[in-house]
Length: 210
Image 1: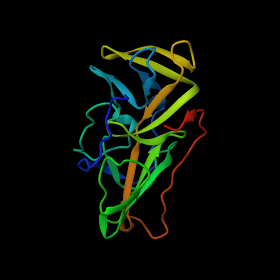
Image 2: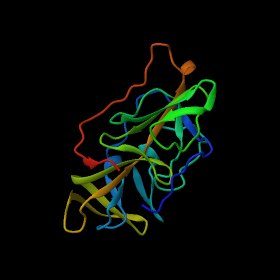
Image 3: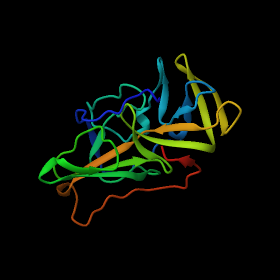
């Protein structure tokens, strides 16, 4: 993971609107690893022929014909107009672009996709995660104490369903990557009194800020 690059100024990929509550299925919070001693795990994945791949059921529904994800947590796209974060996610980062120019903007993270003038964006992550950009926008938590369900992706299939407790003899800390669900909107997309909302749930993560 550490060899991946920060990606910015990529072509905008709008996956569709997000105007209704969405709750990811429970398996989306299982940690998928490459091996039993690796310290990188991924949420929101399925096991493909070349390793973990984005499980699209862990993302809100997309518009028919929307671009499909290319590889695991590679910054698939964003939802516009977006009303709220998925159930169980929080507003982890925020960005705004001046109404007169998209180049005049403030952002809490290295944005993969450029903004349009007058646009507001929010990065939605599970509780305890930070917005991150590593080979595309994603969410990251660095944890030293946690117990979570895990599975290994090997040769195109899942193996070794288990519960892992960190730290242990093989792994002292984990880099947990999760999908960032980015939502974006302009003032004209919402009633004047409307604000961005996000739901949250208690987190068991003891993390370090990367």
